[in-house]
Length: 223
Image 1 (tube, rainbow, N blue to C red):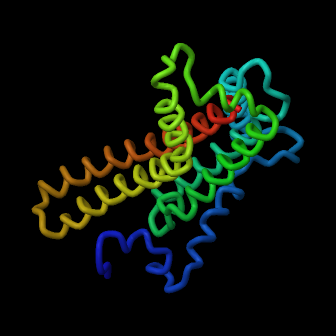
Image 2: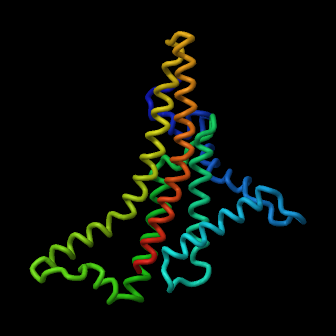
Image 3: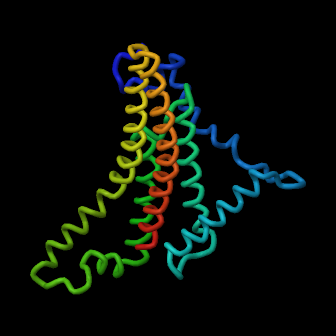
């Protein structure tokens, strides 16, 4: 029995141990089999899907990107998407609803971009703090604002993903707890609403993983 609403995000509530964190690696079992003689439909779909992502991220990275850079962001997208979608299944822990996971994805990426930019493109990083056409009087304030907006980037990436996952799951749980107290007619309406919300959450799971990967790509292109 849940002590509070947020206990559904506790990995120890189902089995009495934090083994639910192992669900983070469940996506590896759904990856296509690359050693088949003939590719199956899932392999063809996955290859086409990653090709579209590669083209999209190549455009975002700009003309100066090097071959292979998009694989980092494609892997990031697939990892987050699998975790978000698996969290919608019954009795599967939603790892992407925890800041300990989302911040662990966002912070190292941001630090790597910052170290690379300041060590290799110092002038570009300094010029990026002052937008083109800024009056001389406003330059100190623009540097301060740009620095603050740059520092909070990993936090916004992590909080955005975790908050969206938590909000949808809490809504599903709140509506689901009202089922035993409803009549049969209202119960049918509730089930219909739950199915609609589950469909919406599936779309949110894919969209949020895409937003996370796209923002990481844009941050990389700036350095």
